[in-house]
Every structure is written in structure tokens, then in C-alpha cells.
Amino acid sequence: MSKAMKPDLGVGVGLRVPHYAAILRERPSVDFFEVISENFMVDGGKPLYHLDRVLEHYPVVQHGVSLGIAGPDEPDRAYLTRLKELTKRTKTPWVSDHFCWSAQAARTCTISCPFRTRPTPYAARSSAPA
Image (tube, rainbow, N blue to C red; front, side, top):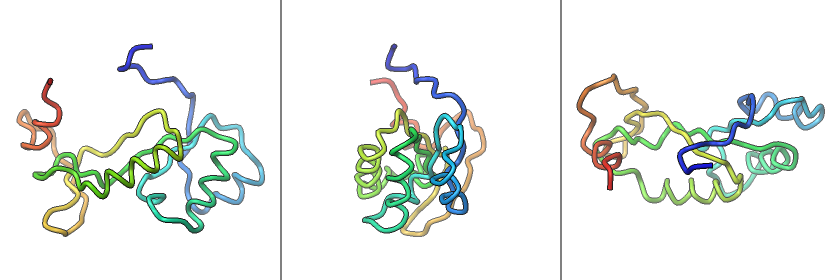
């Protein structure tokens, strides 16, 4: 399998708080769960407890909402460190995120970026061929 190809895991469902108990009790026939990375980028507590229980039975794929790859600045290093730690825990086969602008000058919001023929400066630099 080439680096560009991702494994076909089947059909996944979002792992959300209201469903934790039923998922752990009933173990539904689902191929994988998708988790919002930021919900589990914490130092412990209930989120990681439930994530670890799900990981005992299912693969997990991470999807983030706060990388801010389309913003004017490089992604926050502390965020990337926490994201990397979570990927080691989940053994996710890939990580996805919104192509959006999620923060500037310590103010956080998520703004979807409209399609443009010219990307923002950081997105252009980070996606340019080496």
C-alpha cells in the first residue's frame, strides 16, 4: 500500500458523549468510531476513560476542528504536541481536520474558508512540494 492510500476501515460513526454507555454496554456492529480530537486532548478524566474503553473493542479515527491550517499563522506547537500524544494513544490510521481558520491573536473561533484559487500564506507554504 502506498503512503498516499489509507486503509478502508468500513463505515464509522461519531463517538459522542450521549452514546458512551450504550456503545460500551451493547457493542454495536460498527467498523470504527470517529472522535473529535480536541475532546480527548486532556490530561485524564472521563473523556480518556471512555475513549480507552472504546479502544478495547474498536478502531478509532481522529477528526479535529481547531488546527487552523487555513489561518495566517502556523499551527500552535502545544496543540500539535497534544494531538501527537493522542494519535499514539488511539493508533489512528489517519487524522483529518477542517480546512478553516480557527484562531488569531489568542481568540478562538472556527471560520470555514471559501474556495479560492489562492490559498492563505501558511496553507500555501505547508502544502507546497518539498
